[in-house]
Amino acid sequence: MDPIVSTNQPWTAAQSRAQFAALAKLRWCIFRNSFRRKGGTGELVARIILFPILGVVAFGPIVGSGFAAYLMASSGRIANLPLLTWAIFGLWQVVVLNIAAPGLSFDINTIIRFPLSFPRYLTARVFFGLLSASTIIGTLCLISADIGIGMAQPSLVLWATLLFATYALSNIFFTRMILVWVERWLSTRRAREVLTAFILFASLGFQYFNINYNPGFQHGHHHANHLPLLLKILHRIQPVAALLPPGLTASSIVSHSQSHNLAAIASLFGLIAFTLLFFGVYASRMHREFLGENLSETTQPNQPAARRSPATSATPRITSTATPIPATRTSTFGLNPTIIACLQKDFIYLRRNLNQLYGFVVPLFMVFFVANRMSASGRYGIYVFPIAVAYSVLGVSVLSYNGLGMDGSGVQFYFLSPTRLRDVFLAKNLTVFFLSFLELVLIFAVIAFVAHPPTLIVGLATVCWLVFATFVNGAVGNLRSLIAPKKIDLSKVSRKQASQLSVLIALGILVACLGIGAAVIFIANYLGSPWLMIPILLALAVASFIFYIQILNRLDAIALTHRETLSEELCKA
Figure 1 (cartoon, one colour):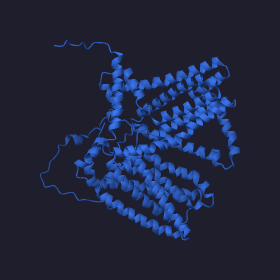
Figure 2 (cartoon, one colour):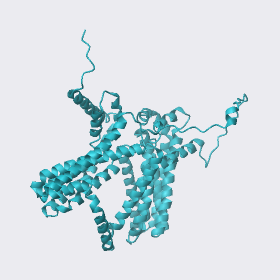
Figure 3 (cartoon, one colour):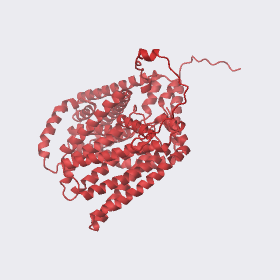
Figure 4 (cartoon, helix red, strand yellow):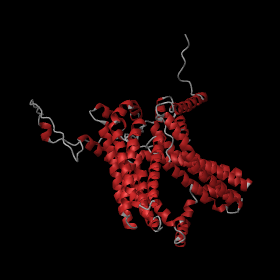
C-alpha cells in the first residue's frame, strides 16, 4: 500500500507552472475545436477575411506612429512628442470601444472552483484576453514609435523603450480597470440606461466637433476662425495633460534628450505610479470576484413584495365546478396574441440594448451634421436622401442577424410551449421593419429641415430600395439567427452582438444592395429616364418579399434541426 501523501505540503512553483500550462492548453484546445463544430468552417473563413481587413486598417496608424516619431526626433521637434502619445492613447480607447475582444468559450471565473490562490487567479485574468485588437494595435504603434526614435536618435532608444513598455502596461491596466468597473456598474438596469445616455451624447459631441472644427471638412472657410479657439483650449488643458500617463511618457523622453535626467526619472516614476494605481484598482475588482461576487442582475436582493390587501388575503379562493368557457382568440391589427406579446418583449429589449439604440440614433444626427454640406455640392445634392437612408440601414439591419441573442436561456420555452417560431421571428422582424421606416421618416424630416426635400422620383425610388434591402436582410438574418446564434449579455461590455460570419454576411448583403441600387440609378440616368428607377426597384422589392415569406414559413423546421446549437450557445452560463 502506498503511503498517504500529506495534503499540507506547501505549494510549489512547479505546480503553479503546471496550472498556467493547463490553462494555456485549455484555451488553445477550445480555440482549435471551435472550428470543428457546426458552423466552425464559416467562422474560420470569416476570420481569414476580416483579419486582413483589420490589418489594413491598423497599418496606417502603426506606420504613421513610427514616421511621426522619426520626424519629431530627427528635426529637433521632439517637444511635440505628447501629441503622438496622446494620439496613441486615443486610438487605443477607440479600438476598445469599436472592436470586441476575442470571446472566450467558457467563463474564466469557473477556475475559482479549483485550488487556486488569488495571485495566480489574477495572473490568469491578466493574461487571458491580451490578444485583443486594442492591445495588439496599440502596442505595435508604440513599438513603431520606438523604432522611429531609435533611427533618428540612437542614444534615446533604451530610455524610449523603457518608457514605451511602461506606457503599454499602463494602457493595458487602464482599459482592464475601466472595463471591469463598467461591468460592475452595468449589473443594474438603471446604470445601463445612464451609461447609454452618456456614451450617446459623448459620441454625438465628438462627431459635432469633428465636423465643425476638423480642417478637412471646412474647405478653407472657417478654419482660421476655429484655430484660435482650439489653441486656447489646448493651452488650458496642457498643464493637466502633462501630469497624465501620455504626457509623463513624452515628457520623460523629451527631458532625457535634453540631458535633464532628474526630470526624466521623476516622470518615469510618475508613470509607474499611475500603472500601479490602475493595476491596484483592477486587482481590487478581481479580488471581489475571486471571493464569489456575482454581477448577475438576478442575484440582486429582491425588493419587498407589495402587501396584500386584507380582503384578498382573507377571502378564501372559490373554485368553480362549472365547465370553463373557452377563451376567444382575439387579434390586434390582424396579428395574433403571440406576435403582440413578442412585440412588447422586443421593444423592451430595444430600450435596454445600448448597441441597438446607438445604431438607431446616431445616423439621424450624422445626417443632420452632413446633409447641409452635401446638398451644397450641387451635382450630387439630389442623392443626399438615398445616401442617408443607406447609411441608416447599416445600423439597423445587423439586428436581424442575431434575433434570439437577447432571449438567452428563455429560448427553450419556445420549444416547450405551443408557439410557432414563425410568429416569434415575425414579431422580431416587424420591430426591425418599424425602426427602418421610422428612421426613413425622421431622415426625410431632417433633410427637409436642414437642406431641401428630395424629388418625388428619388423619394419613391429610395422607399422601394429600402423595402428591397429590408426584406433581404430579414430573410438572411432569420436564417443566421438559427444557424449561428450568439448570446447577448447586457451586463458585459465588449461582447459580440453576432457571430463574425454573420457580421460579414450582413456587410456583404448591404454592399450588394448598395451596388444594385447604384446600378439602377446609373441605368436610369444613362437612358435619360429617371422614373425607371421606381418600377425596377419595386420589382426587386416584390421579389425580396416573396423570398422573405418563403424563408419565414420554413423557420420552424429549420429551428428543430438546429435546436442543439441554439441550446448550447444561448443557454450557457
